[in-house]
Every structure is written in structure tokens, then in C-alpha cells.
Length: 497
Picture 1: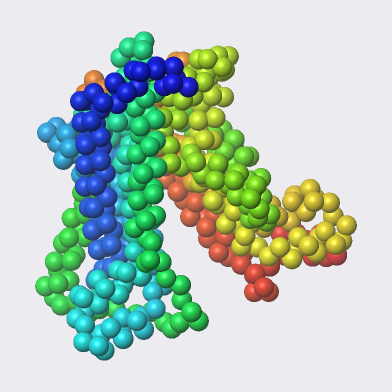
Picture 2 (picture 1 turned 30 degrees about the horizontal axis):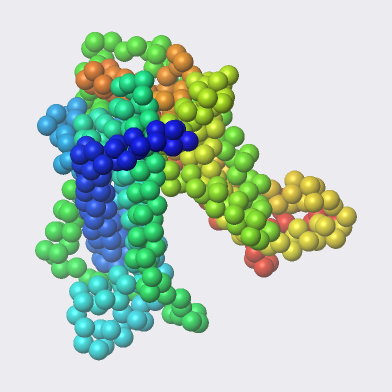
């Protein structure tokens, strides 16, 4: 609506040289980061799942940890330690180190599930191990790699904090600058719409890249894992050095940088009151946002898992739409909405919670749907046959069975809200600060020692929902019953009857 009001100005904004340059910069960053993540993700996944690399189990666990570090925290750590690490090279490096686990995790899972018989047939026909890996193994795991690459591309295109701190102009930074720099916010609206178009085109491109490569196994296949490839001394040493270099840059270097600046800040004193207030606000917003998001996600997840129809599919698709929208676009849209329609809640907590719900509803819906689908619907049918109403069945049967999945989804939403920056920056209540916004404020004036405590506190707080998520996943795995997948322990009343 805001763009349509501009009339002929839309064309002039889109065709001006700065906009064309933004397209090249944004897409160039997406291509480089996605390509590097594919190389690192597939390479590390192959080493930890298909070779005899020493310590591969520990490496596989540590290699996924950069997901818990917000990109803007990693960017702060880099520019604080290496001031020249700005621009394209710095942005590409930081985003690659923060997002390669999006490729690593699904590819590693897919490689563990690959039927080794196909590779053995290829080897028996004379193909070398390297050619077999690229023509057989990679082809089978490519759908998983493409899905991870899509997440990397969308994350890179929507990232705001890292590129802003590293002073590399892409769409998100230009949108924020246009919004803040003048009273005319129409260019921000037009650029936001163009950014949405780019995200849709990237998603469609990923879908086309998987066409013809998705495979389905006919029969049970071979119920064993492939024998690990024995690495020679030099190959194992080279692989270990490469993997340790990635872990060192992605984990060790940022942590050491943060600790150095934190120690430096101790001598000058820390604003403990502001730190505690920011941490408390971060936790409060994360918990409230998770409660609102999961309150919306539970009915949608139950609906799409138990009542498949065109209507439920449309609702699910609408819920997932937020996943394709960059945070700054959602925030800017809600700014316009708050100013024009919902003035009483503009720059108040309710509008910020709406933004969190839009952005992170897909994570909640996915967790609830998977948890509900895992339990057998026959337990619910038994409860209905014994006279329970649909609401009682939902309360006493469906939700208790799905509780571990709901807990996992809640932990995931809490974690992502803690790390979220652009929506919080634009929509937070006047006078309040979170750890993310306080970090942003201090780094904006190059006060690295003052910013370090907020960065460390944010990383420490992120550990809590991460452990909660791991615990919830463990409970989810432990509740799978041996009788047709049904679990009767949480519903003693129905089991007794």
C-alpha cells in the first residue's frame, strides 16, 4: 500500500543506479556465502560420517555450535579484533562461519541414511572412490544439501546486523538507512518489496535445482552403514587441520575476542544495572514471544497433522510465509501498520510480540506438527469411543502426547527471539533495551569494551534454551512406545478405562 501510493516514483526508485548496485551486492554475497557453505558443509559432513577421521564424533558436535552464535555477535568479535575485516570479505567470512551448519546438519543426516550398496556397485564397475563420491553419494544427498543451501541464501539475504556492523551495503542495510534517514519512507517500502521478490526467486531456484534428483528407495534397502574410508596419515592430518581451522575461526576466535574485550572493559567498569536490565528484558520478550507464538502454533500444528484438507494446507502455507520474509521487512511493515492503523500499540510490547509471531511461527508449527504426527491417531479414537469430547481428547490425549515436541518448539522459538535484532530494534517499546539492541548501540560508536559484556551475556543466555531443546528432544525420543508407536503413560485415565 505504501509503495502504490508513490505512483510513478516506484519505477524511478527501482531503476536508479544505487538500487541496481544493491542487487549486485546482495546477490554476490548470497552466491559466495552459499557456495562456501556448500563446500564446508558437505566436506565436513563427509569427513565425520564416511571417513576414519580421528575425533570425528566430537568434531561433528562442535561443528554445529556456530548456529548458537548470532551473526552480529560474530561480526562484533571480528571487527573488534581485526578492524580491517569490513566490507565484502568480512561479511562473507562472518556469514559463512555462522551459517555453514545449515548445510552440515541435513547433509550429515542424509549421508548416514544413504544405502551403501549403490556405492559398492559403482566401485565394482571400476569407478574411483572420488568419482563414486561425486556421482553417487553427493547425488543422493543433494536434496538435503539444496535445502540447507536455501536456508543459507535466505539468511544471508535477510541478515541485517552483521552486514551493518561490517559496513557492507546490501538491501537490508539500505532499507534501514532509508527508514531512519528521512521522513519519506516510501523508498524503504519499495526496496522491501523488491527484497521479498528476490527471496521468492531464490526459493523457486532451489526447488528447480532439486528437480529430477529426488530419489525414493523401493524396499528396505541395506540395513547397515557404509564402512568408513580409511584415511592415510597425510590425508588425515590435512583433513584435521582444515576442520580445526574452520572450528577455530567459527568458535575459538570469536570467544577469545569477546573475552579480551570483556577483560578490557572490567578495568573501565561495567554498567551492571543496564546489563542486568537488558538481560531481564531479553528474557521477558523471549518468553512472552514464545508463549504468543506457540499459542498460535499449537492449533495450526494439530490441524495440519490430523485434518488434511485444502483449507488446512492453505493455513499452513500462510503460517510458513513468514519464513521467507526478512526480519527488517516484517518490522517495517508493522511500523507502517502501527502508525496508520494500530497507533495505541505502536512501539509497545504487543506489536513487538506480533512481529515475533510472524517471524517464528513456522518453527513452532513445524515442531507441533511433527510431534502430533508421531503419535498414533488410534489413541484419540479410543478416547472418543469412550465418550470424551473433542476438546477433552485434545487436552487429555493429543497435547500430552505432543508435549515433548511442543517443548522443543518453545525452546527453539525462545532461542531465535533472543538472537533477533532488526524487528526488536524498530519495534521495541520506547526506553527499553535488550542485549541485542544494547550491543548494537555500543558497537555503533565503536565502544567495543562496553559492548563485550552484552555479547557474552547473550551467548550465555542462549545456552539455556539450547540445553532445554536438547532435553526436550531426548524426552521425545524416549517416549516412543513399542506398541504401534502409541504412548499411554501420559494419559492414565484413558489407559485405565
